[in-house]
Image 1: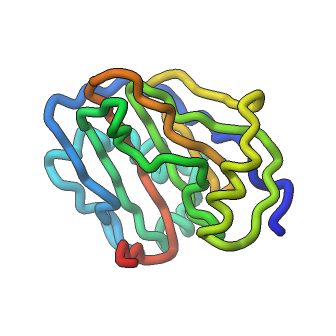
Image 2 (image 1 turned 90 degrees about the vertical axis):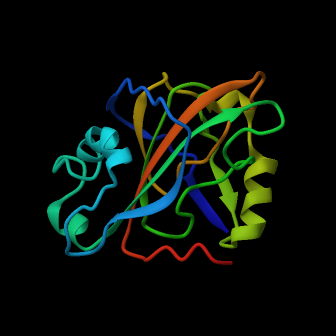
Length: 184
């Protein structure tokens, strides 16, 4: 069992009121390879301040770590509704069993974090059910909209249920020493 590290809260990096005016669905787009420069599509340049405040800020990430890492961006600006929340349901950790770091920002329907001290097995499938079974709603925490939050692999969270039809923006910047495969 993995004990007592799961259930930490994210760090607040800052507030970034963004406005997205077009539908978007960019999923783990590599914008920087190890030991290279950024290549950001024109449509995603509006998110450069988030990249700068997260992986480019030397107070957040040191130069050597950033240079050895892949940097990915996910941007979803989608119609969400009670049958489609726009993100995976259920309690989970981004980067489970890795040292990956992620930064997220949303403009509505805040992500729910939980400070329960979870005990889970080091198994990707079993741990999802264990996070759900141990989730204690008394320990729920949310953050204001437009907060840029840094998540380490021990931050347990889930998307809040969507109760009405609305457009929602969700941005995630991921940093990993691993190349994301997205197959399987």
